[in-house]
Length: 89
Image (cartoon, rainbow, N blue to C red; front, side, top):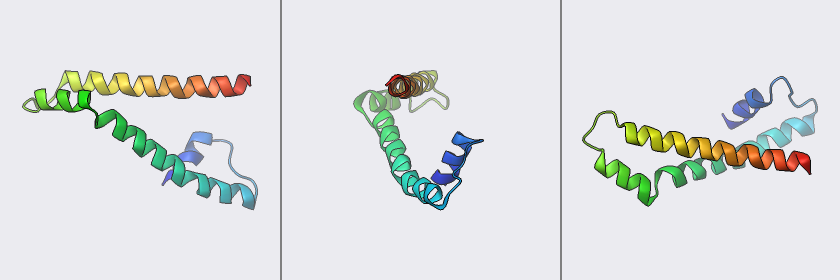
């Protein structure tokens, strides 16, 4: 699954050699694990638990949505900032 996601992300580029395909499948698992770990950090901390406990009776919580949107945007900003920094090298 992660390898497919990496192929979609890198489209239209794709590995053109056997080594490239092997590296794609080798790096797919650690990237997936890192994403799951980051998702756990975002949703399983004290602030997230407090928001969850206070809004558990509401079927749709605007506060939860805003928190997760902010966390996602922050994660993307960090990712793209690091990617930009690496490209400037």
